[in-house]
Image (cartoon, rainbow, N blue to C red; front, side, top):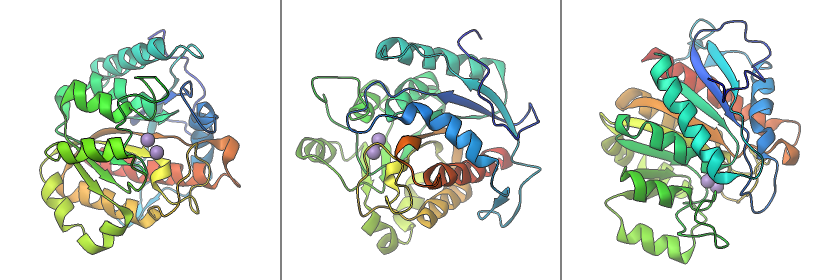
Length: 288
Ligand code: MN
Ligand code: MN
């Protein structure tokens, strides 16, 4: 596929088989702190400094966590619509050409729209870790933005969404979510412990799930390197427990990790956390 640059690749990954990795280095609609275009490379570098051990299955996963890194998608700087078209095309192509599942590394959250559109037939439910709903109709006059991405997905695909970690919701989004309770479920960070996962299990049971992790869903104390930090977030163990529930009760189809901004990071801790989550997600996806 000529839209794939073939680089950068995960430096320490010698295999060319395993989970498909794609980079989508796009931050064209970032409104606060630009820099997520450097996220894919930063996560790739970080993963090489981690032990491949899964907390979800409690064992080393060096034989499971293997990657076929296809590099970054070639995206024209500033051209939002063309970038979305290319991401969709590449994801469709990957679906046709490979039997392995994939994860896309962002980039800003808007990249989730073309990915979900490309594989909407294969998904029953979208699980989103995010401080925000990204359910605005427009943001700064723009219909296609990191702040409107889930609204467009809801309108275009009608796939229900569960938010985990949401805590920054505008009045417009709140009203919309209230009116669409059939489509949109929200778990705030304060709901996680209270719920003990029971409500979530009911919602994810038997479902084919797309997982989108906006790193700002996690508390900025653990993930400061994001474009829109918001206090009072999830702790990383909450995310592991969510993955454990998905592994046990649902079927993970594919996903993305977005909004890592290395320019705002401290000692690479956000990239390292994203990389650690990638190890766990790969374990879940490749264990079946
Ligand atoms: Mn988001
Ligand atoms: Mn967010």
